[in-house]
Image (cartoon, rainbow, N blue to C red):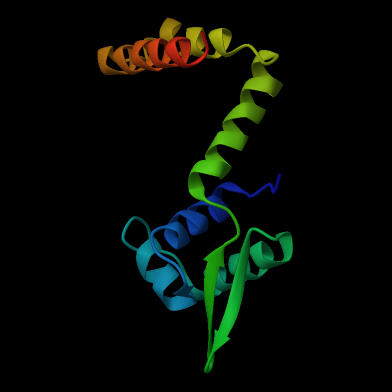
Length: 124
């Protein structure tokens, strides 16, 4: 699994909004939330290409960047890794951590129940 820093993840989020995308477009998307410098973004893009998180193609004098994996795939792998590392692979302990800190909303609980019901029907 490719590991990316928090800042690289923000860049990936901007690329996932629509690719292929130029560095200037990435900067524009990122600047909607916080101020980013062109040079910082270009440095991060270069690192991410080396890591294999994104790829690029040259178009004229600019580069167009695309992700090497889908957002959902990346999030699922990172989530599984987190549960494995922090909760010894026990998803119940992970959810209990949120529940005990009052971070679960009623809508979250309903989603979890629906997910469990669906899983039970599909895995009987």
